[in-house]
Amino acid sequence: MMIAIPDVLDAAQLARVRALMEAGPWADGNITSGPQAALAKRNEQLPETSPQAQEASAIVLDALGGSPLFFAAALPLKIYPPLFNRYAGGQNFGTHIDNAIRIQPGSQFRVRSDLSATLFLSDPESYDGGELTVEHHLGVQSVKLPAGHMVVYPASSLHHVEPVTRGARVASFFWIQSMVREDSARQTLFDLDSTIQTLVAERGHEDRAVIRLTGIYHNLLRRWADS
Image (cartoon, rainbow, N blue to C red; front, side):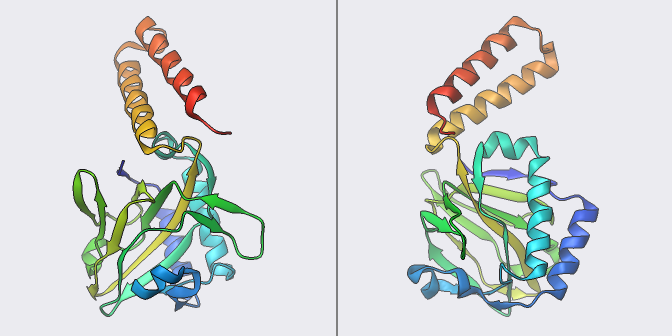
């Protein structure tokens, strides 16, 4: 399941994060790479212990907490604190699969990476290339979203970032451990939730069909979820 989530950051949040990115101490992107990714990764990254990265990460996490669409799509149990990267001058990230477990350095905090997320911070017209390309069972899909918009997709997918040949592509990226491990189950729940929300808008919360479908949703979530 690959889902675009618009307007995760509002104008003020986006402006503040961009200011932090401009002031950030950029370093080699392989500071967080595993052995396989290090062979394919050519970009820059904010060290996650830097004050700029920590403030920007808190802004993104706060914004995610206010996004019903993100919750419906990801059903998050744990979120790895958002990281930040930059591609310019032909830099790219070759085809790879994200590590199954992400451990925050210097802590016991760990996340099973069920989902990967990319939150775009640069306006798409400000750079050429930089598309996030994800391979899944239905084919190959490339994504280049407006600043402040985000895409989530299975971390088990092969994916890559195309070379940036003009300007700079700045983004936040992170991983989510979902309450529901299986992608197909999350897709079912997301489709059911979307249908319920459509019916609520048409019929109201007290409609008996809405109540029955809501019960089915929660019974499935109860069956599939870890907590």
